[in-house]
Amino acid sequence: MTAVATPTPTIRAEQTRAQYPDETGFVDRDGVRIAWERYGVGSPTILLLPTWSIIHSRHWKGQIAYLARHFRVVTFDGRGNGRSDRPQRPGAYAGREFVADAIAVLDASGTAAAVLAGMSMGAGYALQIAASHPGRVVGLVLIGPTVNLTKRDSGPGPAFDAAPATDEGWDRYNAAFWRRDWPGFARFFFGQVCNEPHSTKPIEDMVGWAMETDPETMVILEHDPYIDPPADIDVRAGEPAALALIRRIDRPTLVIHGANDVISPPGTGRRLAALLGGRLEALDGAGHAPMARDPVKVNLLIRDFVRSLGQAA
Image (cartoon, helix red, strand yellow):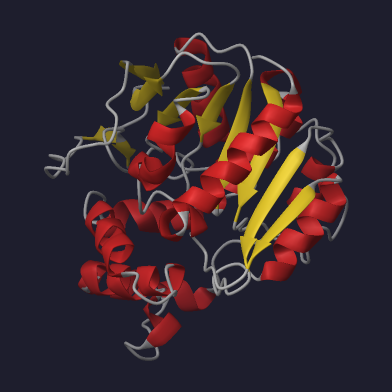
């Protein structure tokens, strides 16, 4: 069945990039077009995954130019934002769709296997790809992973679809508030994401990227399953689906987590690294998006980890 996709909105004029892509393209899956870019020609390839579709692939802008000096880098805009389509049907934003998009981008860019890097929800997409397509994955870099490891997965609570109790704080994480004041939610949310002092610029960037999607798209996404294992992965009764994925993963892993992350508790990163037998880098003073606030430190951590793998993709 062909997916119904809304027209891609006009993308705002962006600042001059530190590096422009060497190759760009689109993949089409069931009528949904996904925009991708390739930088550099080194080896192995690093696939910089999308995160929550409130922002697009430019959230990696502090990494692309540096990493492309050493490796081959591929990015894509997650469905729902950027130059990719915004399908308006339930199920279009399930985790398995992001996984299939990533595999299609690897194919289109001529990439046999890659190191996967994912921030926040992108870490969950990376786990799903590694569990269901292990041959396409060399290693994992998980930054501020937003992955439920403690309780069975469920959809948004009833409060999300009810009238918000107030227009303050996390009560703004609400469908009615999003429809009424999407910019207000974006300003609040990214203030939490980048909670380090002097974060004006990354907050401005992220709020701007959020204006390239719309609340209706994000409400649909909120109701679709995020960690969405294929049928051949056994999820035990009462456990979060991420644990079933982790049991299938045997790839080298680096977890980077800010000690002051208020979106995903630092304990999540510690436990995830332990379960995967990976290395944890806890960044003092960092919030949820250390790649935006301390790109040099994050870039060097990624570079050294990828070099340590000693395997070309």
